[in-house]
Image 1: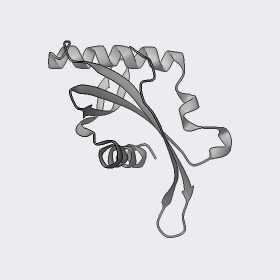
Image 2: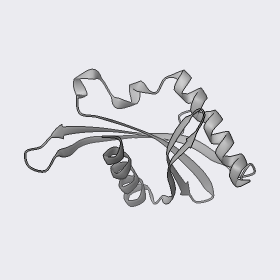
Image 3: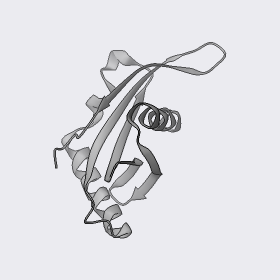
Image 4: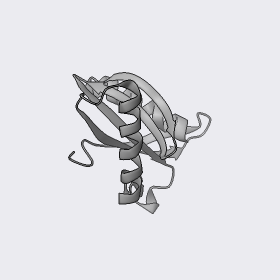
Length: 120
């Protein structure tokens, strides 16, 4: 589900928001950065959450303060490693809800995009 969600989120952000793709699944000791994109001169880190069961609530509800703290540490590490500390950045999120299709696997039912989760 994770790979499908990340791919659909990437396509959505490129097509509908004009983002440029940089990297995917960058792993750190604080967790993984799902998508790293660029919007103009801003580096956009995108947390992707995908679910098949919408009755459990929005996929984005699973991004709690602890997750955000870990993502910020991972982002700082990534920026430092790339020597991009001077670049502006933000943390966005994409939530995707799928339903089980017949022969085609999962069908994308809904997508929710939130820009700037943290305001930093």
